[in-house]
Image 1: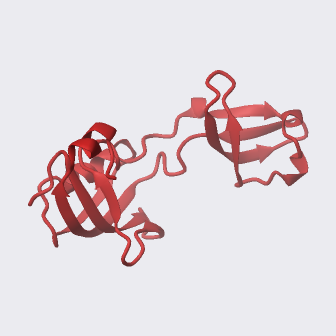
Image 2 (image 1 turned 120 degrees about the horizontal axis):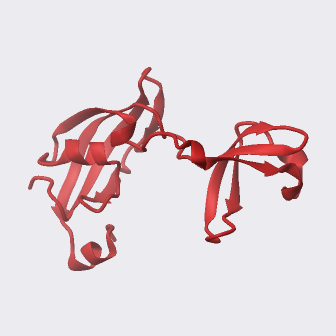
Image 3 (image 1 turned 90 degrees about the vertical axis):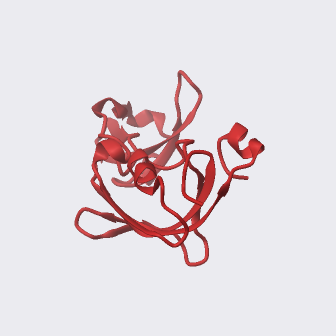
Length: 155
C-alpha cells in the first residue's frame, strides 16, 4: 500500500538542521505515527512521503515555508518584569508558559532577553525560520478507520 490521504503512516526518522546537527529523531522501536493529509506533520515532509510504501527511504531538505514557517516578528513581545511571579528564576533561552489574555490559551515562550523592566519573549515555534533536513524510512502504512478520519489523527 502506498501513502495517500487518509492513511495512517508510521515512519522512523531523523531531523537535522542545515549544518547536520541532530534536532530530533524517532526512538528505536517507536516510530512517529500520523494521519496523512490531516496536517499532522510539516507540509514539505508530507509531500515527500506521498506515494511511498513500507520499507522505502526518504530524504527531504525543507525551507522554512515547507517546515515550521518563517519567524514572525509579531510573536516576539516585551512583558513587564513585574508580571512574573518570581523574575529571579528567569533565564535567557529558557522556556516559559503563559496564558494569552484575549484567548486564555496556554502558549510556550522562549526568553530572549531580560532587562530591569521587561522580559522579551518569543512564541514562534523553536524551528521557525530554519531549514530542516529529514531522513528515514516508512515503517507501516494502513487505511485509517472512519473514526480516525473524523478525529483527524490516529487512535
